[in-house]
Image 1: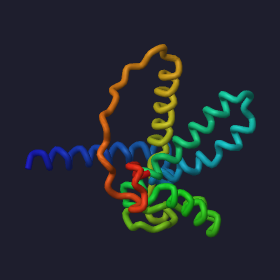
Image 2: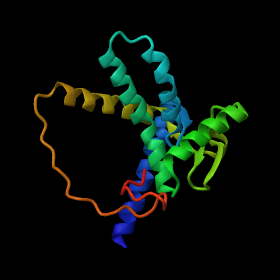
Image 3: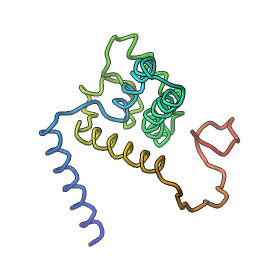
Amino acid sequence: TETELKEKKLRVEDALNATKAAVEEGIVIGGGCTLLKLADQVDEIKETLENEEQMVGADIIKRALSYPLRLVAHNAGENGYVVLENIRRAAAEKDNLNMGFNAASGTYDDLMVTGVVDPTKVIRCCLENACSVAKLFLTSEAVVIEIPGPKALVVGGNPMDNSGYAM
């Protein structure tokens, strides 16, 4: 159908742009694992900060950097926090910083070997844009948002968890 052709065209364009970005700046492990590795470095930076507010900001950044990996795990039907700890454990046991969660197979692998990669430029631009938006929120005097209505109970996640939050 015409819709399928448009979607296929957009996927090809996306792949072409990702390839160009990878050629420009290289590749890093994907699936949110690079951001997790960055989150693990925040504590070292936090020790050099001058005041309490900056340290709180560092904690927020650390938490935000782990979110994409937890979301990938959730979308694969896994508990994001468990996957996060399993990645850290697998990387330490195998002494391999490229270890991560392969959501397609549900295994913990060397993501460079299995081809789960992201262009470095994409990761860098995402971080720059996220920080820019956060700065805008912090310096704005007022922000208008839409308050969401009550959410239905989330299906999936841990069957023992009735909190309504799957992550």
